[in-house]
Amino acid sequence: MSVKPWVVDDGLWAMIEPLLPPSPERSPGPKPVPDRLCLQGILFVLYTGIPWQQLPLELGFGSGQ
Image 1: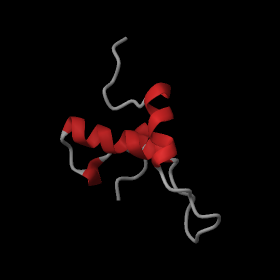
Image 2: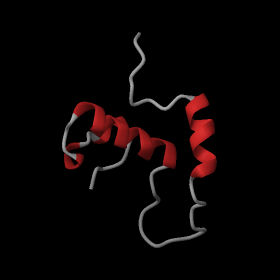
Image 3: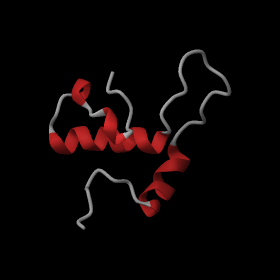
């Protein structure tokens, strides 16, 4: 099985996570997608060239909206 370039492995995530601001304690609306999955969604869109609105929900990266 080949490595997908939009998958953030543990080593890369260990470098990126400390740079992100903390999430607010409570906010109205639906629960946000975890930061790591959101980043993977962004990388998927950049790698494939699809429009953000067409991000497949099945991947679990969020809705793209």
